[in-house]
Picture 1 (tube, rainbow, N blue to C red):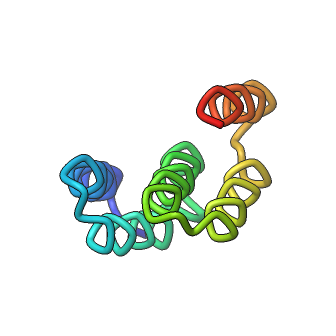
Picture 2: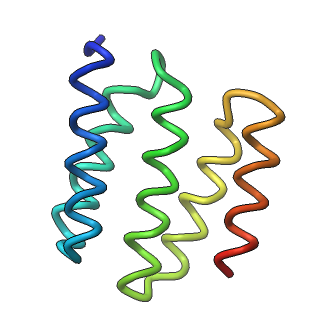
Picture 3: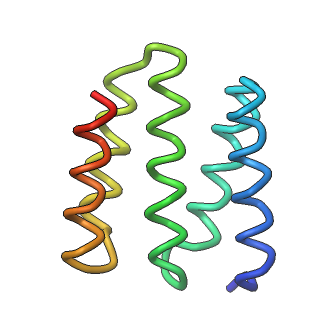
Length: 93
């Protein structure tokens, strides 16, 4: 189990890569975050899933974006976050 600080740092790197339009780097880092946070940090896992959604949307891979949207929602840490995830993804559509 990885430490939360390490995972959060990796998440920030992934988001930074996405902001710089380094899509492949961002996707790889978001996937690493998902791997390290899957069983121990559901909030971070949720954010990493939606980070991948954004990355795949940037490159026009809508099937993959949909896949990770569903993954995020299925693994939402609670009902409030589930609803929030639906709301924000609806706004971006």
